[in-house]
Amino acid sequence: MRDVVDQLAGWWKNGETAALATVVGTYSSAPRQPGASMLIGPGGEAVGSVSGGCVEGAVYALGEQVLGDGRPRLQRYGVSDDDAFAVGLTCGGIIDIFVEKVNPETYEHLGSVAESIRSASPVAVATVVSGPGGRIGKRLVVWPDRTAGGTGSLRLDNAIRDDARGMLDLGRNASLHYGLDGQRRGEGLDVFVESFAPPPRMIVFGAIDFAAAVAKIGSFLGYCVTVCDARPVFATASRFPGANEVVVEWPHRYLAAEATAGRIDARTSLCVLTHDPKFDVPLLEVALRLPEVAYIGSMGSRRTHDDRLARLREIGMTEAELARMSSPIGLDIGARTPEETAVSIAAEMIALHWGCAGSRLSQREGPIHAV
Image 1 (cartoon, helix red, strand yellow):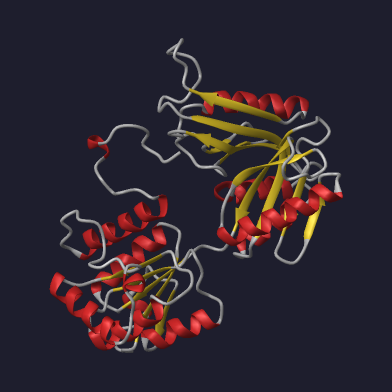
Image 2 (spheres, rainbow, N blue to C red):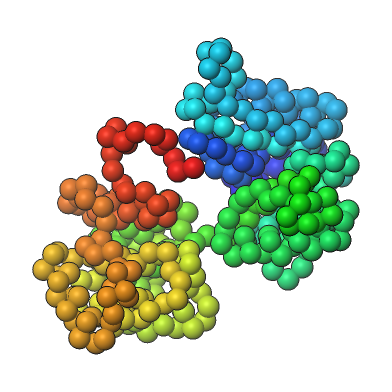
């Protein structure tokens, strides 16, 4: 819903009604991930996408039905082997889409949810998408310190609250399954939890031309980007328009302080681009010993890499700690320019995140996306 929340909240604020279609489950090579949304507006507008074009027409028609009778629906779409013109996904995947009517009566707390999303404050929305008719469409809004709404069962609300906060910490969206009264090993209720966590962080160390390109692509991918360098003449906001902030500080001191303050987590990516031992070695000593981090990449030639490893071993870094570092940084795509190098680094980060090797799709068999 993140991509359409401003439009939806605008209609909601004006007391208007829209249909919200949300991807709540995917299987095989689904084109969009859980949380992707499409709106059918009060004037018939279509906003957003749930499949990249494959089933939007059918979802639009379903949304009109929901607007007409007010009854939320869970619909599965997949490829049809029997009819080439049947509604389905040409990629061969399967998606479950939940469609509901949204206005101030049906979604009382949308204004608060939208405000949390706009202010980058963490919030999760848990919606019953399958189960007894009276429960479908019920929702619990979960913040780190409070909740709003409910499903009609205190035990179920408590179970959802605890699970949703765990998912919110990881920034994950998924459908959870419960018994009718909240039993975690039960059956009968499917609850989709959509987490709106603050954007993940990317910290780029080294105020060089490559850093400007990496900051730009990091911002494009949805990261909150910080560029850090100890040299004030180079670490200026004007040189890094793609960054959210530019910090003048010794890299290892900055990273240690951020970790101590709790601002480094399992979604944080660290790109070390200085390739200068006096910056790299103390910084990597801190980085490689962080308990949780998504990615640590270090720029440099093979010679620089070997020298860096030797220096890190001299200060007592273990082989397990060194194995956490991607060095030389990026995928092997023949990158030369700063922009090409930024693509290489981003591609490696994406591949590692999804557990993929970064090979050419044309030389692989099987599903495109990990199941």
